[in-house]
Image (cartoon, rainbow, N blue to C red; front, side, top):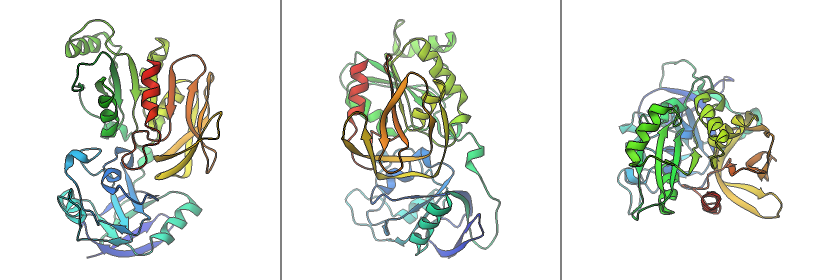
Length: 359
């Protein structure tokens, strides 16, 4: 069936639908990654967005088991590809990409000239769009909603590593990719995950955590603030939690959105990038060295003002934007990229080790 992608500036691109015949609207963004579409499509940071993949061949290795995804469902509002392959060949494949999108009622459209579409977004900036099937629908701007509240868990969970752990990390779920938890469990720590709006310092909540962990003192040794979608200024409750943690000098690590939220808690400011960073090949230089790391990224907002007491840890080698913070005296650190990768290089997975060493 034919489908049409309509951009906010009036541009219309016709294509062929392979997913659900369900119209959808959102923010049109592009990713230049060459692989890892199952992980990208299930990344909660893509909530509310129509994703354009620049790599020309998509679907060739199908869809793996749900246990390998980064969330329990597809997070994008729609997918645009240049050449869809409906005959996957991979030992982990359980179904085709088209069937997956049909099962979750999300449109998947093949539009041949994704290069033109990507160049347009790079020149004019990210814009709203909608995928239609003959009948028009309203525009939807995800920047006007608190998307974190839509992707965060609803209750507290606790996961322990195989061997008994001495340390516990509190993970604030703002839309956390599953590999963050896997990376921590692999390093032998308990992972206590809370919703974005859960106050761990509230007396009633504190008792809940005591009961869950089976102890009354030092419930957790550090806090990790996860990635997530949308404008960080909507996530005020998480910012307040971070401020309370700072007052207690607790070790902190922010990832992606968590990096922005930690900066806001410290008095910094954020703003929207022209078209964001979405790929598995973003170069980031380490402060005080000539070392450059290749990183996985997925975000549309970034820091515009670094908070007092912090210094840049990493800098994007393409556009000079901030990619990480270190505090001068406190065990507080953050990165704009994804050290847990999935998809992408694992060059910066050592960030987790650095954080645990500080603890």
